[in-house]
Length: 285
Image (cartoon, rainbow, N blue to C red):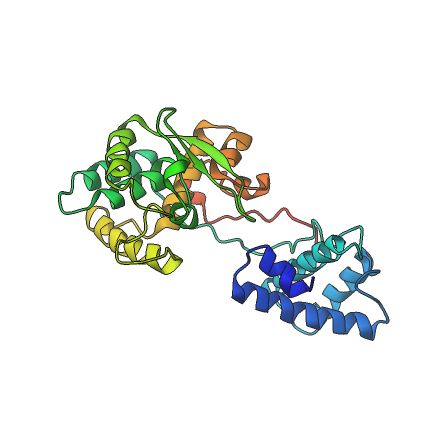
């Protein structure tokens, strides 16, 4: 298996794969110049490479991309049994601002938004159900796009969110007021095969398909609340609000984060202070 095939197997985006390939080509060229090999370089060698990149004017964001590429490459080498360790594991660039959107919505604002939207007679039930899943279960657009009939356990009042390379699988509780509309929608679409929220005129689901529906939905939502921007804003608002009620580990499960550090970046004592991002990574400056 080649590195490209490995990345494809991990279901990474084409642009990401191309980016990682370019970075690894540069990294391997440096290893060759230092008479090192991909299967034998160590942590100190990686630090020397980072130092060399900084000396040539590389930015912290560029080096974050380089380190991510090396981490993937080492995982590939481990998979191919050419290495037993990953020198880039746990190495992060300190001081890189990890953007966390501001202008988030409190729980009360989210619930009011759903209540107002659910009363709109000109809005189809599919969009109302999708909004409820974004607000009450905090799922991503990708997870929304992949939902099928069998993921809804209506007798138990649950929905199964399948895991991916980036997220963990979890089973989330549906709100009581979601059940009636969901039952009607599932019954009306019981003959529909495949993805549940695909448009009728499309044969197959796609991000473009779902994004078109959501784009129009958020246009409608902004008429109800001008603070609303997109699905990412809603998800981060939900996660931030969860952290006020649940422990870090509980919120990690609800959000489907693979790493607790991904959840911790949303911890805050004041929503107005969300401009501050975590900077407590590996001590590189």
